Image 1: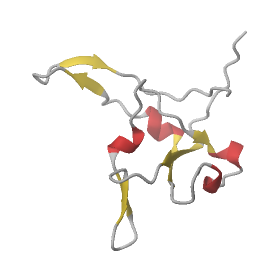
Image 2: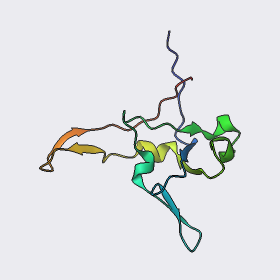
Image 3: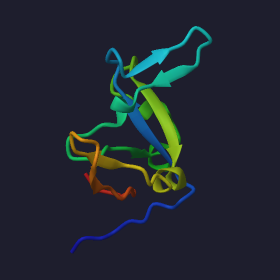
Image 4: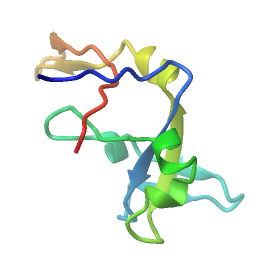
Length: 105
């Protein structure tokens, strides 16, 4: 039996951004610019951590100290409604629904 564990709209999620050239850049003013490639996943299911399960410590999401960690609120993820796949001519061939699913690992 599969149990579904709900993710509340107000939950904070963490995404690890590997320290790979082009995924993120620290600007001169110390702000960080993150590339959309940092959220890509071949199966269109990018992994995130639930902050509350990591005691709200983003360092626990890092695998290497040079990794970056971004946070986003679940409601903001669910509000994304513009993820589409286009053919070479620019015609939409597939639209994606965005949600958060808790998966036990």
